[in-house]
Amino acid sequence: MEGINYAPIWLTLKLSFWTTLILVVVGIPLAYYLAYTKSRLGLFIETLTTLPLVLPPTVLGFYLLLLLGKHGFIGSLWHRLFDRQLVFHFEGIVLASVIYSLPMMVHPLVSGFRSVSRNIIEVSWTLGKSKLETLIRVILPNAKASVLTGLVLSFAHTVGEFGVVLMVGGNIEGETRVISIAIYDAVEAIDYFTAHVYAILLLAFSFLSLALLYGVNRRWNL
Image 1 (tube, one colour):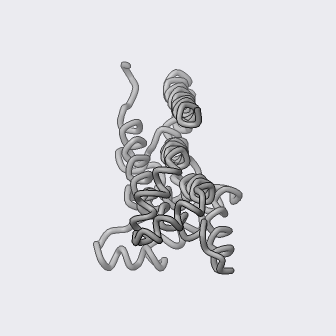
Image 2 (cartoon, one colour):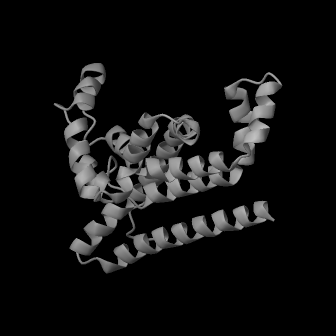
Image 3 (spheres, rainbow, N blue to C red):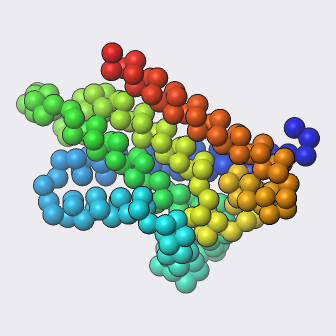
């Protein structure tokens, strides 16, 4: 469409892809630990993992800005290793998005892992399978609906991010300006046509993602 800048769309999809990919790698072992641990540490970690759901994005974004900034613990380490800041760069908003969307991946996985019959897990162990093999060959296939839920919710949640991305990444064209920030810019400029286009794209994507998720899960549960 004439007049529409496609850069925020591609940047949003890129951010959501990398965030979801990292969440799969981080979320599966974390969810496995939380699903089966009886340690008090597990309660603390589960609470910490859930915090992004209840904290205002600006609060989370503010502390991530301090943590990822040049003088923050993670930001200073990154700067020493790569001679580049995390904040106001794509890598910074990816890391912030991973933390912000972590509950969207971990919670469905924990529920799915806990729903798998303990009997078939123990049978796998008695057949000589390691915990890793049991996770890959037994638990994950039996929790596939929860895995799909985590993937879709993580991706869709990242697509719609605003506060955390704005706090950590600012509003830099081609680097951190995602669709949600582009909508904000368009409204401020009283460019309601552009705002409508971006907003309808987000609305359509969110609706189709949830419809696909519910449709596939319903079919698997038949």
